[in-house]
Length: 231
Image (cartoon, rainbow, N blue to C red; front, top):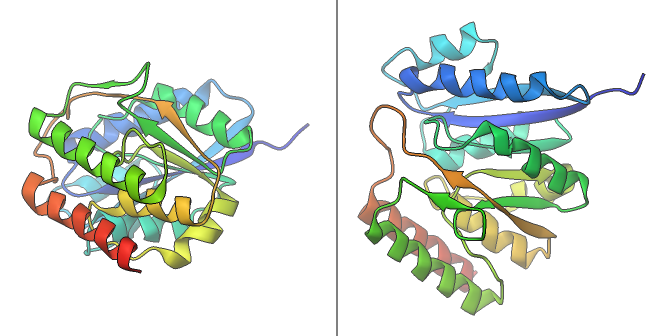
């Protein structure tokens, strides 16, 4: 019998007690229908005040801790991931587990990185106010103009990576905050990794308060772009 391919799911968390269990349930449901795949879930927690870690451990996830932000948490999770394909997703139910198949198959087809996009045909969002859309469009235009890329969405964390991509990317990444997706997109272009955008529909956060702050994190993303331009 052919061995199952291991997929690693990396989820950064901070006070997601009310959402994480449902996210994991949806992930399990997806993999329960795929006899060719096995999976591990790595939760990287930012020292939550609630029972997020208890939920993760009870449901059999590997739990790591990181206090420096989303970017740092993702890097830590990616470094310990054992899968031949690594997927990053959020813990607030905004990313639909049914889209895992497209992200996984893109890597199997030979791409280094598959990036979920809310702004190509088949994608969409119910969780993005106009000012965040405007900011995202500006950053997309700026990155595409500077590096000659054709991205449609920079600030979205539902992505999959090959081992080759992680080996090339991880030593170069330094962003600790919400600019991590933008940094990855730029570094992927610089490293000439083979990328593809996959349509993704973003649902509203199911419960709790979002961690992204428009002005603070927008400035962080701009700083990331300028750092890459000067580097």
